[in-house]
Image (cartoon, helix red, strand yellow):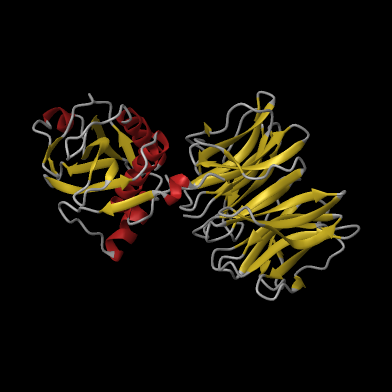
Length: 448
């Protein structure tokens, strides 16, 4: 996997202008406020990102990528609402941001925040030559600068301009909510290549897909390690299923769970010390836990039914899972040691593939809706509130939460092909993020 975008980005300078800080109390209040259904998004004017840099050296025509990427990131954040205004340039004085001279039209449009910048090839104060990305933000309400940042990389590429725009979007989200943005997260997924299924990793918006496995076999159901350095997945070899772990940095692979007739749906505990999965040598499956330090395996369920798809609560105390012990696949919940099992879903004849949200307030799952087929739903962990997320003529599967709990990635067959989509947790903002190919499935959203 090409890692140059990650390893060669050097953030040499973080220049805060206006020195706005977010206290833990205010950040928590802002996050709760932004989570309300009636939350009014913050109007933001994304101005021009001009070419050039503070050193006045030559620049390439790469700044054109910054504005569309930034606008898309801010829209997806569900915090900001980009306002349709001309791409007027903001100003700079030496290495400092200067507020736009005329904000009258922006004020008429109710704009709260204005952001602008410049991108080019130049030298930093210590003489390093590379890509320079300057970004500024101004708060119309306080009539003061919100902040300014400079990002620098030794390499000059369009992907790095995108990465820096993502970073700036995440910074703006954090400044207004105290919550990390997700614009630099990744999504792993499975894609059909010839007769095999291979693992891929792409940016959260679908940009830059990179192939991770290339062995021509079936590699399925990827999941990220909490430190984002590894993928664990199910691999088919000689008609048996193994659970493999692969380092994204080195490509090194190792077998975590030996071959069996069934080894599927691996998932890390929140602390990364154990791995749960469903396994069966013959007959119905049970849920097991593998201690990654001692490599000892412990059975968590032992039932005549098929128990599948374990999903950890973010506090590591509980597991949601699928079982047909009631006659049909339904969602159950139990303590992490397998005790205190209780059923959560009762509506419908098929509910499966639970995914616990990062904040612990929702469990997403695949639900069969009469007259619509397989859709995505979410419910509270006590099972008292259930909401349908997706609708329409499609087959939706494999929900995976974004690390901020605002979005879901999933695979869906719409128009005859399976692709990866993202959607806001309230069912708005549906967006297809894969293209081409014949079959894309099993998305897993990376941690921050």
